[in-house]
Length: 163
Image (cartoon, rainbow, N blue to C red; front, side, top):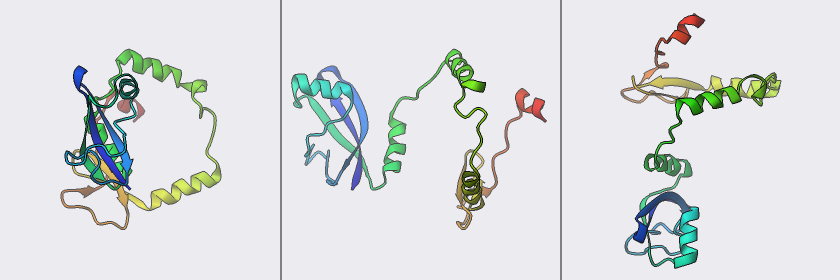
């Protein structure tokens, strides 16, 4: 099974859509073969255009093929515009999820869950390259240019108040 990162353009209105299509056809969306299964995208605008005008004005092309869906979706994020929330919206969300409005407020994890989380943490280590940090299995070697540990946090007024 392949996960194809694709781009669909509705030519007359020059609207561009990106997505990931799962298929057994490694050549799906290539210039030589085109779209072999009738899939041009699942966005509502594309499907509405197909219903009204057919597929003749849709151009779909493969950008990259992946064998792993998570890699394809990670690459898709590079093509999508970032979702930017205003400070006011972020504040509203924060208030809406604070205290008793939070679904997990007053709850605790079951002992079995805590044990699973603990076992998971024992099998990983943090590494960083000075810019970003990530977790890797403890048995893996540290890649070149990376070092063990997490990045130092920037000291903010909120952090100073806690220490």
